[in-house]
Image (cartoon, rainbow over all chains, first blue to last red; front, side):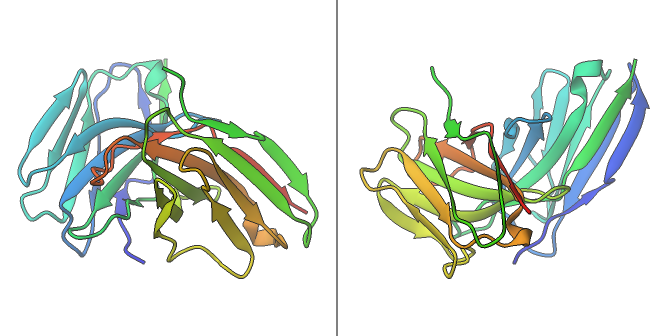
Length: 111
Length: 115
């Protein structure tokens, strides 16, 4: 099946630092989304992107839909302890109803 | 607004036994999804319903997995017989829209351990 490649796989940062993560694919996607999953919970939608080149912010989160439509990145600024969790990128291809997820990036924030 | 409800939260069975998971989506959400999440991986779609019809079940192992959403509201996912590799969290999600925007609301998941 279609794969989304997320990097890095994990990050350890200090509270207050910024963090960036990205997601790439060999195929074009029409929609990119970023979800966060806390331990023992289901993923929660953070940001949705629907247009190539789109840059969207949600508080301390900023995400961009790559101009080639094959990638997306997520930035978290001024990290806080509650940012700890696993961040997943997800994408929808044109004409497909199936949402595909990356393998996730585990973030640890040291207070 | 109540979220997506799933039960049971945890289930331990032996291989070749059967198990069933239940999901009640957010009220009014037409689309319901079952995802399988193996430890260390992202969720993988098993089946997607729109009302009581199947939209996509291409990745559902139909020799052992079955799912239904008879009245277009709650849904049941069954595994019979279970294999060791079925150990995973089974996530149910729902969405309001009929054209998929990818904006899903997930339940807490049902964690299955097969011994």
